Length: 192
Image (cartoon, rainbow, N blue to C red; front, top):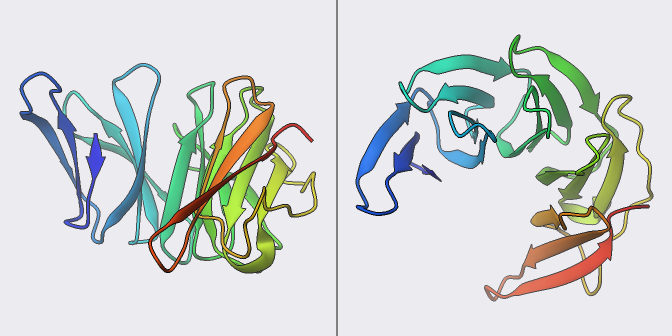
C-alpha cells in the first residue's frame, strides 16, 4: 500500500504491479499509512488534519478521525487492532478508537511536532519522535502520562523524523534527516 501527495492511497498486487484499489477521500497529501493485521483494513494520516479508516476490499472509508488541528504526519495501529495512535504538526499525539472514531487520549505538553509514532508490543506504551528539542519520548498509552525525559539516541541533535521499535520492544531505532540528505540512525532504550 502506498500513500501520496495526490491525496490518494493505493493497494498494489506485488506479483503483477497492478493497482487493486484506490482509496480516495482525503483533501490533501497523505503522509503515513498503517495496515491492520487482518489485511482487510488500513488507516491513513493526511495533511488535511484527518485520519481515515479504510476497507481494503471495497475501497470504502469506514470512519474519519477528526481532532488534530494541523497536518497528521504519522499513524500506527495498536496490537489489538481496535486503536490507532497518530502524531501531528499540532504538537500532540492522539489515541483513537477505530470503531467509533473517538479520541481516547491526547498526549500533550510538547514543544515540537510529532513526526513519528511507534507502539510498543506490550500495547501499553507508545514511543514518539519529535521536532526541535523534544527528542524521543515514551508514553503510557492509557493515561497519556509521559514516562521518560526526552532522549535522542546516539548522535541526534534536534529533530527526530522516524522511530521504530524492535519486535521485543527493548530497543528503539531513530532516524534524523539532515540538510545534506543524509540520515543519522541511533539506537536507544525502548523499554525505560
